[in-house]
Image 1 (cartoon, rainbow, N blue to C red):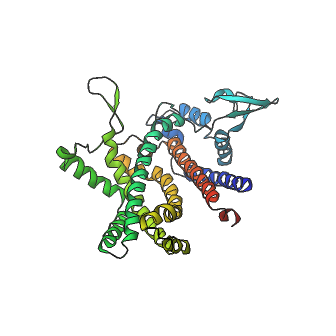
Image 2 (cartoon, helix red, strand yellow):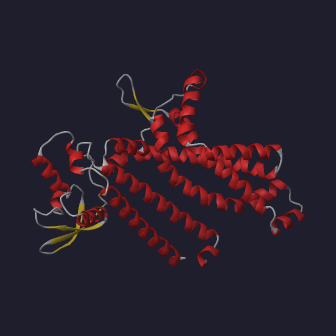
Length: 358
């Protein structure tokens, strides 16, 4: 088991390294001067040169790539010379010195995602820290809706296989998987937040926290979570229904289910005590990937509903060419995706030891 965990951990590290490399190369070859993006419309060659020197934009791409890895690595190497870009005192992060030589210092620190180009030097980590919890709450609410409703209707669809009920559920599931999130977001916001507002009392747009009109600070507005959570949960809900239906039908044809029926157990007891646990395995595996995907897929939903999460922040960063925010956000989402998949693989291998042997 330990060997399997180490293998998965090393695989995750290599995957993350590949993601970092692809992201850096992608944004390194984009047209435009990052230093000019920071400076804006001002034409000051001297200040432009200072910005390039400060952020290392005047170095070769290979050197910039090393600097980027050095900032992201928990253990990083820094120069003791004030004229070097990697001079330790010129960085904002907190660190613990591991050891020093005449020219270099090796430190232990949290990964440094650098500073925003557009928000007056605000760190990318602080921006993500402010927005990621809202996105996580939205994703958890969406997955919860998908699981609770999807498992229930999936079981019913399997029990009433080939009936009119099963056909209706199948059509709705197919429609739910095919409809784009941004279209359903616009439709739900207009219909439930505008047309039926006097009945639903839901807003077309709004975030988890809203500012009080009388200057009493912020307050929680949980009703603003309802529409974006439903919209974001439509596609995983459709997937869960179909997975649960097909998995349960397969399990119900196993020999041990026939044995349970021969012992006189009724259908409810068979599903509860024998079939449900085994039928849930593919659902759990799929939903783990969907949870990580929702963090990335929330971009359009958050933007349309004006939900102050990481997805909306990515859109704003794209509009303003704030490259560090975009790169940092993508790395955080990729890291969470990798971590969630590793945890699910470990749990799944614990439930089914045959996986570790494959």
